[in-house]
Length: 169
Image 1 (cartoon, rainbow, N blue to C red):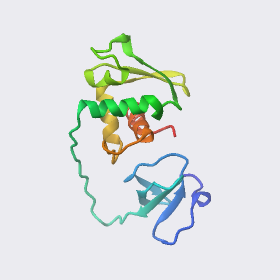
Image 2: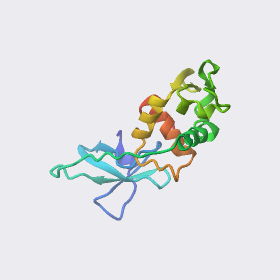
Image 3: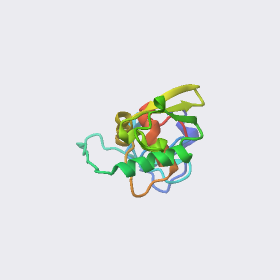
Image 4: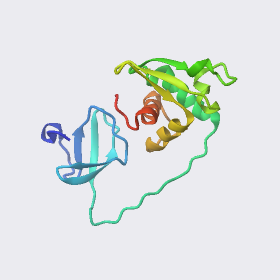
């Protein structure tokens, strides 16, 4: 992070680091700041991310969990993204080759093996969203809750799916 002195926010707890952030940072993200490792423990305040120092001597483990979801739940996330989550950077979405896979709605195409083409208005290029990269997007979006999400969360899933990270917003 560049020039973090200007990004620090006053804190009552000197062990925590609060930094201004112009982009969302996923909970659990580990970043190197001032030569030390910190983990994001709170990102709910507007434009402020809270980091806790990581004890480098402590052993760390990775736990992966599996979540079983329905086709409809995934379709709903794609619908939320298309109807508002990604519209600030994606100005056009279409079904590749008009192959709707037996459904009438574009947001249902991906879970049926089809592909959506999303036009990136910033870069003026197209990106393909298919089931394989959508699943990768869910995996990269730490803490995604299928029972409690909004357009911003759906946007993060789609960006993680096609870019491998969140680059807008």
